Length: 99
Image (cartoon, rainbow, N blue to C red):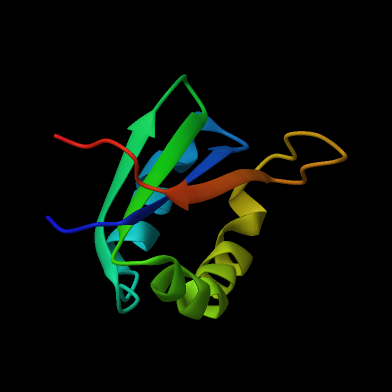
């Protein structure tokens, strides 16, 4: 795996019963060019963390429209995390250590 950049997105489902629908949407998502791998962790009954490993910062920048379109599909399933954040808490940066 030759990833040089990663993103992490924290989100919360409105109901635990939405896991199957959320995961089905993620499985059906057409992967953007440059996305090396994606991982989803269930961090509590309704909370999740998405981690994407990317070829480069340019690859994730080019994929933003695709990621926003996916998020627009998922918004009805997601709770607001806070007034400031909205329904996601995204961060990204260069990958510094991986084994």
